[in-house]
Image (tube, rainbow, N blue to C red):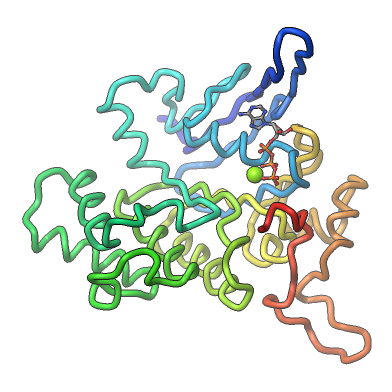
Length: 290
Ligand SMILES: Nc1ncnc2c1ncn2[C@@H]1O[C@H](COP(=O)(O)OP(=O)(O)OP(=O)(O)O)[C@@H](O)[C@H]1O
Ligand SMILES: [Mg+2]
């Protein structure tokens, strides 16, 4: 029996940029290895500065990008072997993505409810209208919404926070074992971020889903993660239990990151109050947040 949900074995990705005269090789991900166990759902945060390879690694796990070296296995199946539509569907049943901009995840011309119903039909095969609607409603309830509230609305008629919840509900329709969320809250209003990251905890605890949470934001990562992986220039420079890594960071880069934000439970010396999570701003570069 295979007891690994995800097995990333020395995965690497090299991009070649430029033309004939100036060719540049970029090592986006360099020999990254880690595992997620079956039956032990956890939240793994991948943290690192801009360009450190987080998205490239996430895209390889989602099989949206092929590694140039190493291998990635999901439930013992090499992602490189996924070729036909049946194996692709089976893969999507196990792993679902959540992206940074929820507005890009939805067709602006389609009512979100249509999209959710279509998604459910795709994953459950032929099922009656009522059963499909009930499954969509149940998924929406898991993210604090309902088909009643969402029904009839187009994406632009919903807030970013609502839409990101709907994107999570859409992912749940596949009944996945793993969700890969690439900066899922960086475009969400700060006041709503905590509720979204808390939702990840609920998914882990109530539905047994593991979550790979890619972020610049050390505060939310510390707050919700079981395990943390710090990336720098494509390599993992530090990893382990979230509390251990952040309380006693070994790598200078981890220390730097730690200093960049206040940890949620470090009380403010003047007021002796614990700062709220909502006020903590990601140390990510502001120019990418436009
Ligand atoms: N399709 C591509 N072609 C060429 N280079 C790429 C491509 N995708 C990513 N890169 C490069 O690979 C490196 C890693 O990029 P990646 O997007 O994975 O970083 P990141 O950690 O997600 O950054 P950010 O925090 O800004 O999202 C960068 O140098 C980037 O320019
Ligand atoms: Mg990225």
